[in-house]
Amino acid sequence: METTPAPSVDPGKTLLLVDDDDILRERLARALTKRGYAVTTAGSVAAGIAAARGQPPRYAVCDLRLADGNGLDVVAAVRETNPDARIVMLTGYGNIATAVAAVKAGALDYLAKPADADDIDAALQASGDELPAPPERPMSADRVRWEHINRVYELCERNVSETARRLNMHRRTLQRILAKHSPR
Image 1 (spheres, rainbow, N blue to C red):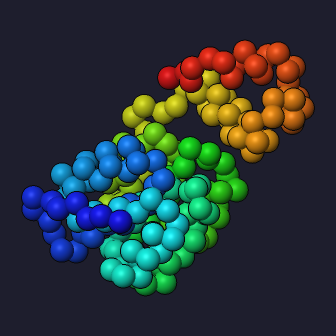
Image 2 (tube, helix red, strand yellow):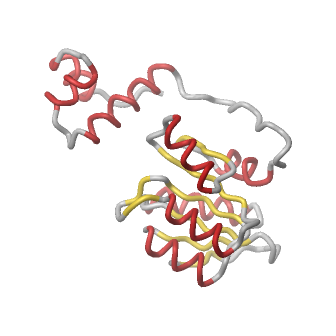
């Protein structure tokens, strides 16, 4: 857990950033620090909960799937320490059920990865009465399909045959899709 100092930080803009992807976490920490947040980072559920309890943040950005558990546990800890905290969930495995669970746990928004710092800042600063603006560059239909296939593949523990069966897809077709790079 580390804190990134900001050039001109508002003491009321403390932010907890929890993600197990080191590169993404550090990139977002730098970008959000430039936007005036005092960012504390954590790479696991345990570290996120400890940081939330040690210094309750005003804002939080948390990945849904972390190596040691579920980011919803961090959301609950943040909500417990600061009921007024504004929390945004990030995930590369978005679906309606997890979005509903995140909102029920106390997140005010749910963003699909890759989300940039502008999208996150806008979600954190949006008032509860207004709808967020639609994304400037939404994922293409091909990218959404590719993400879904890869999510099912990971849930099937990288078993091609089982994934093909669950997706009702020919095994060789699935292998060709998995061999390609992700579409933009």
